[in-house]
Picture 1 (spheres, protein in one colour):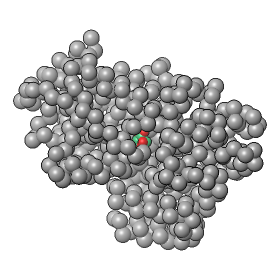
Picture 2 (tube, rainbow, N blue to C red; picture 1 turned 120 degrees about the horizontal axis):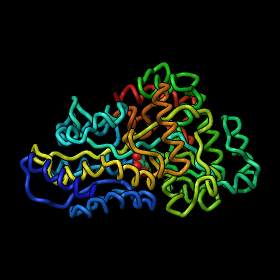
Picture 3 (cartoon, rainbow, N blue to C red; picture 1 turned 135 degrees about the vertical axis):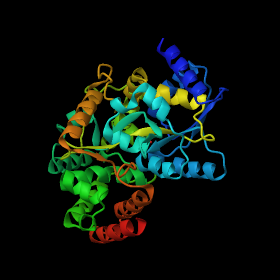
Picture 4 (spheres, protein in one colour; picture 1 turned 180 degrees about the vertical axis):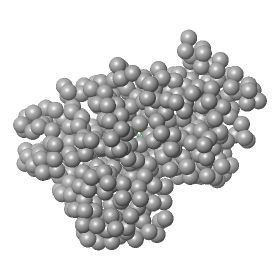
Length: 414
Ligand code: BGC
């Protein structure tokens, strides 16, 4: 019944937008891991049920860096995809170029304004117009742990940096890998999100990453955060370079490693492998960031097809915003709904905690856009920070050099 209603709504909307024929919807995305593909399937099925064909345009590469490069090439050659998965300031950048379709009529009809939180609307809207529909809210300051590895070594989930260091030491001494990590710039930056928040606290995170205050970027606190990255570097295995994030998750799933510091898309991999939170794996906030949430939201932007929203674009946007879809999709993805009116009933304990943490952080002023995932700055600044964090993680810079480089890289990129 819901699907029928959606179809009718989408058709009515398309008709009112002056459009006729249905076509495939071509979707550019970077959801290529097992868990991500399982979640994406929920969306594909939803559209199939509405007789809308799905033309898949996957571009592998966590965090979406490669996907955004492919997108730029497609748009430059005059052949943009119908719909594109996007993060934060990338949406704003494309909206500023006047490339995105205006979804206002649909948003108004479906009342998106009253169910999508302000922090997401900041990115979904440009100059007051809806230009993207948010699928979810992820957050980056999580730890994923193998329960039997921790139990076997008598390790409780660490609550502070010192406890984390003690735990990593114990795991390493046992011969297992303490930290499963893939040496790719966006993964290094994902850890840095959590380490900076833990080291400097929320006011510092904001000054450094959101306000880009050179004093904060070049401070002793930032130097300490880099020192902590070096400590973590001492607990990854020798083969970490270039490893994809989901292969790092697999190391925790298989019990070869104890911890992964990663966004909650990692949960999708555990679930896809048949693992249960509390029984097989644990999720907890990065030590010292228990009250904070560094978030990113996957949104779908529709590329303007000559000033109109096509029928299939409207159907896709409408499907994404439906509360039943938001529940089913996010249960599989590891994220939480982008709508505030979706029940947590179908979610596991990690998902329920994610929803609770998000609401509490928003209320207490502890919700911040993730630097690593494009919600603190435009890509130019984000990439400049990536370069410094990765060079430091790989030993090219010591921490004193890293803060100097950070200040100048950010300055140049602005
Ligand atoms: C996206 C997630 C995705 C992750 C790894 C993040 O930037 O928000 O949806 O699962 O990258 O690819």
